[in-house]
Image (tube, rainbow, N blue to C red):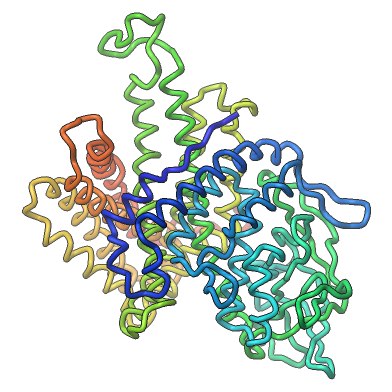
Length: 595
């Protein structure tokens, strides 16, 4: 069985030394997030994930979810008890405002807890993270009575939430949604239609499931402009929150999936179910995007979290597995062979994963802090800058972190050799589980198109220009620093590649949109490399300030890993730029029948 230890020390280093969480003390909830409180929260979460959730990961994968005789869904052995303990810990409502039943701590802390949970057991983590997305949508767009009725129950974990967008004939193109909503005299609506790929659409963990459903009110205009969002509970609650009659919503089938077997992926049937409008008519997509953006950031985090647990197990295996001798002569002469960690190619694989993990975690923390600013700051200018940051980097986080996270689980599996292909070691489950984050909540090709087609030009390019200015400023300010110069020089070169690619799109994609489509994924990954490189510079600066004389210490390890990223990973920006500038000619030349 694979092992997992939550990276609490790394998380605290990022919060305290890299991003200086104390500078955000003016935001609501941050004054309560003292160093002692944050350390205690992360430490407690780590123990729960290591001791309760991680041991259930293989159990859940092997058992999966199953249908019950009454049409419900039964979760695997141990999941109900683990969920009960999770709820008792108050983890779902960690960042929910106290007046809605939560603890009101920064979302940044909640995101780190979620990373630990996903590393330990992705399938389990899907249930509460969907609930947190539903809470966010209701808090922003729900009526006062909806917030009062639903949010405290969701924040406590007594009820769980879902989002229902996809239908069998439409995924990304939500303008094709056919689910209908018919007005009723009492202000409610009758919801009729079928949704597919609904995570946690039915289960036995909570007393009620609150579905947020995208549907078209009868007579509404076609396309996305005619969609509205509805809250449709599995069991209709009374005004005081007690449960009443079952609603006309049911699970029609469970999908048989490649991974995340302990998370039910459901076909949901709405047969005239009672629902209530959330927000304004025909503005449902706007409300749903709150959940989608929450989900996309969370899914990017899943890529990191699975990469982290895969790395931990591969690194330990490399230190234990004896195979051959080092190229420079035996290193462990008292053993029949050296552990494979002595081999440069094994170290290359491990450092590639590690260099991604540490920078990706920094990116998650940086962006989560911006999320807190956007939601909690009184400064309109700061909120706008934070919104710009999140809008620009959300597709990068979702696309790059999940693409790379999956690749890293495969690389970690490779470290195990043949044992990585055997189920008992757990590595093949990480590979299977890491495949879905690249697909759901908007496939990664769509993220790339969103970045290039919408986010670059939004508000006259305000967000991307601010990003360029920030990184350029950092490079200039640290160009003479003896420690940082070997890091900021390659970062400056990579930033130049990103700027060159941006200009190329401006000159070559407006008249020929296929050029943008053909280069979008490479642009997304080019930008991802620049962002991760910027994170490594900031990590290295903080590590240098805390450096001890011990050459094997944690901070010294960060400096070496930063060099590895700059020398071995960041140069890929040149390849990405070359692909972008090749244009769409060869991509689009073949006629359809030639495929």
